Image (cartoon, rainbow, N blue to C red; front, side, top):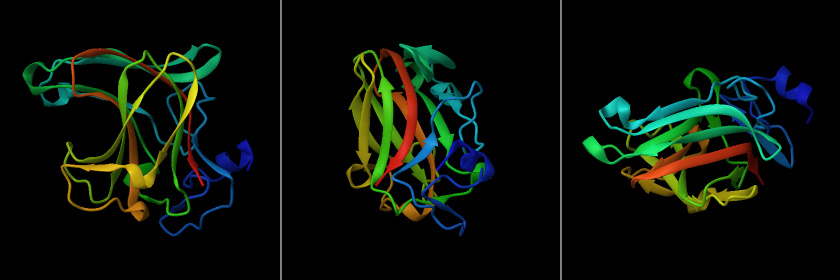
Length: 196
């Protein structure tokens, strides 16, 4: 799959199907290679920075395009505060434009190239079953100060405040989250993809 194929098929993430669009064969399915200068992924959706301030929390953060140790990256920096029942900052991406879902059953999980400050972060998934802001499917990882690839098998995601099992047929959003305790966050990612 070439960069041209990504641009020609903006509604499909390689290797996944969007509302009946068949999956394309590929060893890795790029969600975003973060090579662009804007905050848009290969699928045309925009990365968003979200914090607990939407619910009255006091956490502060910013998301920027940056070059970190030689790699074009998306970077989340800020301070997580537990004041006013808060406790998170995140960068999130819809996996298909306009709130659509994708079918990711052809893949075993998500792989992320990340660098951090030695703190723990979460990768959150949202499906069509997730209707409340506090619901998600989660995995925790420690982001080391060196670039590293982290693999998150779908079978290892834990449901958080939701009883429905993870439905890979209706995957709609991913989020990288600094959450749950007061700390200074600094997380950079240089690639996000599905793996087989």
